[in-house]
Length: 425
Image 1 (tube, rainbow, N blue to C red):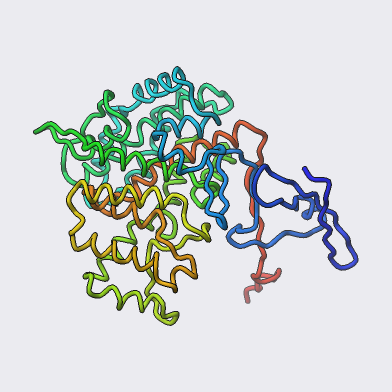
Image 2 (image 1 turned 90 degrees about the horizontal axis):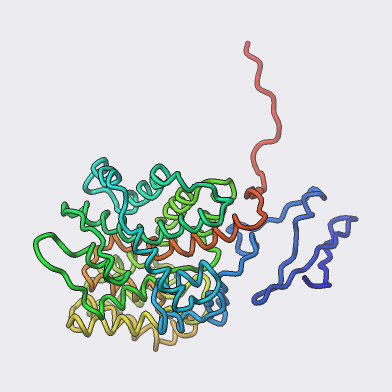
């Protein structure tokens, strides 16, 4: 806490407001006392409001920095795997070898879901969006695991974390298999987290499936790079739901619902839709011109970022991975991917994009990778939700393990003032 104070003058009132300093990032002005003066702050979208105190993730969009518990995202993607990042987000420190082994073993022991849950899927239409199914099934976990629902108990919260991290790949793969009309595949606990997900997605009872190591590494990196991203819309939704005392499965389901919005989790799907609209490499210049025309509604998807005003720190890692995958699968000359690579080159070299810092972001590359692997676009956001579950849970756990209040945003009311109901004649 700083000794400095901000002074706000309103009419003949002078109000002093404390200023707090975090370990990184801008100072914050504590405006909680304004309500006692009959005042609220007005901040649509909460773009200038720190709604909580957190020690999990830090972003500096201007400098292109993303840290998880102090570790740069590129170092984690290069040196760690997803379960190690899960441990870090939950516990605040990297695991020792013994802690790492125990954590992985416990996750493996929770990968199956209750057999009765498999019957839930039959209640959905086969053409239902996988995110709709995932939202319903994850919410239903609370009906099966109510034995550990005392969220004041640290041990029971830990069990809930294991269940969510372990079961999300199983549920995600089941959403895909159901839409395909294929039988569900059981998890195999001798495989890595990413390998297990891929085999549940692509294996069938008819034949053996072995994940390509390059593809498994790419999938693990996608999980890492989407694991957490500070106080975004879905994370804030999880925290707000959690502030009511709702159980963690319901809170994670609320995060899935928020992530489903095309302005949030659907960006990598939008990249593929855009490439489909362009249609051919020969039309790229035409569409780039449309993107530069402020009067044209067309926008290049997967370029620039609301938070990052510099290069997305996740994009460099994902770019390398993307090229590794295309080379491994022999898709470098595929028309769709050639088109994507030409767009990437233009964005990195064209003065219009460079000046505006409209660099390719993580969604641009992850969408291309998932398409190359053979995952349908309807599953892209499901994989995002799978990855982000650990971040959601870490934020929820951080909140409920400390003193917190139920979230209650205020408003600037612009409706009618009090009026009387007309008397009937």
